[in-house]
Length: 202
Image (spheres, rainbow, N blue to C red):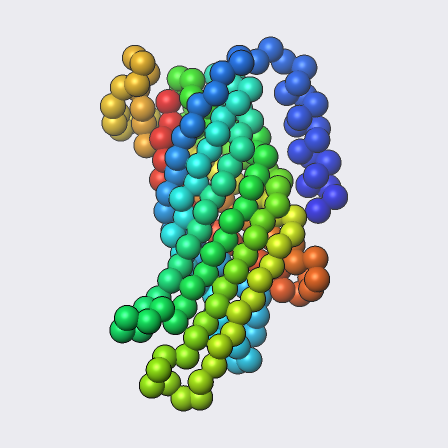
């Protein structure tokens, strides 16, 4: 964790020495995420799961092929038994992310691949209820908050043109990211996730 934070600080210092444009953009990504709560399946009903993630990226300090962003990838999963919800999961992190390469900023770029690295704070909640006809009856939940880190790759599909915005061609992008939420109370029960998100690249 210390080496990861050191890397982010080095990137921040290097970026601050270069000329940047004082502008902001907002981009979005969405797709499935796989979460592991690191709990033994034989002793709990709080299993690993796949959720839906919607990520809001507020970009600032943009250049052609790089930008910093504030990101909130909200992830939700629910399951209903009849009219009653008996599974629910929520993951809400807040990241400061450095993006470089494809899809990094709201400026036009010819890059096909890019990278991202971020640090922040996250909250995770998961609950499981027994169905009305299920025996034995159970009600379990877990709540975790703590520092969170992410790394990822972003690919721009330059051969596909979606539409134009201010004379800039918008292409689809795919972002593969991994994240790790550190449980400050029990390091054996950290939360890990892998996401595949579709978005836009200029």
